[in-house]
Amino acid sequence: MRASEVRRRYLDFFEKRGHQVVPSASLVSSDPSILFTIAGMVPFIPYIVGTERAPWPRAVSVQKCIRTNDIENVGRTTRHGTFFQMAGNFSFGDYFKEGAIELSWELMTTPQEQGGYGLDPDRMWITIWEQDEESRKVLIDKIGLPAERIVTLPREEIFWDTGQPGPAGPCGEWHYDRGPEYGPEEVGGAHREWPSEEASDRYLEIWNLVFDQYLRGAGSGKDYPLLGELDFKSIDTGMGLERVAYLLQGKDNMYEIDEVFPVIEKAQELSGRRYGADEEDDVRFRVIADHVRSALMLCSDGVRPGNEGRGYVLRRLIRRAVRSMRLLGHDRPSMPELLPVCQAVMADSYPELRTEFARISETIYTEEEAFRRTLATGTSIFDQVTGAVKEEGGRTLAGEDAFRLHDTYGFPIDLTLEMASEVGLTVDEEGFRTAMQEQRERARADAASKKSGHTDTALYNRLLTQRGGNVPFLGYTESTVAT
Ligand code: ATP
Ligand code: MG
Ligand code: MG
Ligand code: MG
Image (tube, rainbow, N blue to C red; front, top):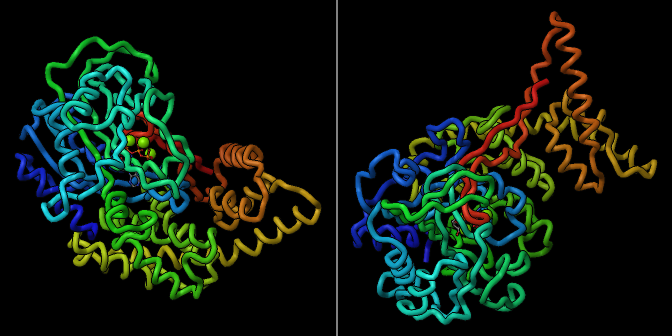
């Protein structure tokens, strides 16, 4: 089943059951404190926290999402993209737990000929909060799920809240057991965490249901009192479209689905290397396909490469894709080959990619050219300094050298960190920061001195708010290091 069909079925299913179809919001939120839209519920936050009245009691959407915190997972797990699509159904004061659980079960297990996804009910596992008796009852009595396949977790693992007094509630997460080839066997019952790290590509989390049930008081982390039940309860769910698509397409991971794999095929053709022959190369292929798609979608929503915030995320995605192509042995411009392939597979779901493509592609091709020039000068300096360190038997690149690469050759520190780790070295980051600080002080002391003009933003923005376990967070703060 094509990803666009997974999407269509989701929207149809819920529309037929009284949900208003709401188009995806932009990846760029109107709220400047939120870097990107990271979950389907983001556009509905005012209805969930109760600052606005929802125009409809039920809604459904397939929301474009970007999660930069998953960037290191891309290509290494089977299930994390920096860009992905979250399908979600929402109830604002309408149906609650029983309705939400029954609807998701029905869509997942209804045979494909009858409009569902036809997933095997016997492979379904669900995690719930240890005190959520109501969900347990629905799962056992109404759904008929065997108790062994229900896993209970403590509040720290499975509770959603906004980080402040207000609505909060437990989640129910649907997992699909892909079988023993994909990880160790896990058991049901009470756990501190589930599934284990090694088993989480086997018990694939496909759908997260949030039951906004309680009013919470003040407190840090998950340590706050529950003050009682909310009068106005909401349901907020998120199903990973690519995850369901890869299960239904019989693929090993989300980078091999119809919306992503054609870019890998093109990258094979350009590089002459084969996907599936070498694990490190495979990670690069997947990173390329993921990042090209994210860059395309970000540009389409108006982000431009830059040195700060959103622009820097886009710049970093393009640079990582270009570098991965180089590491696959392809040292010519690659975006003009890869981007049109990605556009062609995404445009069915996002027709604006056709009308906007001239603008998007020019931005991305120009950025690749600029980065190729930076790489051409910086890489030989990098090779010299790292070569010297290794010759002396050292393991660490000096902070001053990292700083020089940054200041003179425009190498951002994260690029230096990445390239250093590829040659088996660490970087004295403390020394790098000291050198940065010294330079900043020099600049300040000499007010007349010409500014160097480099501004660098740390990509790893801290998240402001988080919900149940690994569940969506609402935003980032940015830390900016300016020279
Ligand atoms: P995981 O534990 O696998 O990282 P999560 O708990 O962080 O997932 P949620 O925040 O609950 O994910 O998001 C709802 C759903 O969106 C998930 O159940 C999953 O199907 C999907 N999803 C989350 N993150 C990604 C991602 N980076 N790429 C693709 N799909 C994702
Ligand atoms: Mg999770
Ligand atoms: Mg996660
Ligand atoms: Mg989750």
